[in-house]
Image (cartoon, rainbow, N blue to C red; front, side, top):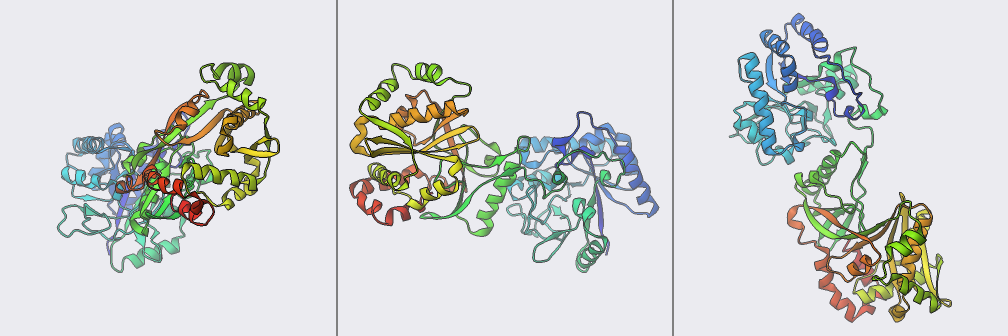
Length: 544
């Protein structure tokens, strides 16, 4: 069986996993790293396909010409080493055109094949194959039948095939473009053995066994990079696992699988303000990989929709590129209190005369309302049920608040407003990362005229200012809500809070405020059904 050897001719510093740790000056080692490989290939009379990066061909045309004259195939590795999902269709078309023209001008022959940087053609970027075909290339070798955070079409065939332009894991006998996928050993899960990290790491006996097993039916497609075999490739001072495709954690995306009335869903931080993907600075592109993971869950695992709730003021184009629909979820409000003095900058500055904040706080104190930090969860939940009845919103079970108080006590704070010994309002806040998030203001409607809510807000802002916090966060507010005006009077800055939904067809269907308005009339008329039975918490669980 004849196997295929391919060499991705690119700079050593093109490696996706070290680019954030590179020194200011990077030495060009292309000729020194390729020469030993060419000698070895010549010694064993072996030909290979060199997928040449355009920037390398531009700086080393003589080397590319020499490789071609030695009988090796020259194919395109694009012009720059950018992943396909970072480009739109026009940008990709320009990149590949520039690469083809450059290689043809050097060798005198138009290249026949293409390989995307980091094997970054998958079902979310399958449009790239149409452009490759339009450029009259004969084959592609970008599909890796594994699933990683950067690339992969796990269900794709592991043998040469003609891919469907609608689903890269399917064959199209009438297709014009041939795909040469990177070799994997079929097992319970596909085991990558075709090159790169896997070829460097797996023991020789296993590679020999795997390729032998592949060769019983199909040829193997092997790839290497010249910098992998060159002894003088620079050693980069980087976290150990950043050198490996599955090692260093550069981001986290907290999410939960939830059964809703609208189907099975994955929701980032259900029942809460926000909490989408968090990615380390310099690795923002990995949000695309995170969104691809969720997208695969919908397409492969029977999940009806995914909703990612993003922090206030954030927008993410990578999610849009991966087919997510952006919808305005709510408005966020916050005050920047870093280095502020409460008396000077807040009480006499931010609280304007027009807002009447100072006046209402004084009235509350004059009427005998006092604020005290406490952990009486029974009192808090009773006030919470009264608030939910007023709003017409199904309540969460008490266990939610008990668990918040029990398990994240160092970061949660419960303050109560008392009239004599009677709790008439309360506030739950979460303190983290120099941010004081006020999320659970509850009160007894019978005492609204005592301005206890204003007293609690003021106490929380004063607490945050005097304890080194930088931001006081008022939480999210439903668009066109009366709470918008209430939060503005504190001098809070308004920001838009988006959620990203996949598939797009689910976005309108799961609009939370349409569902809220659908039920609120009923819950306001007969609140006891929802607040004094398990019906309310059961409904709340179905609307994350």
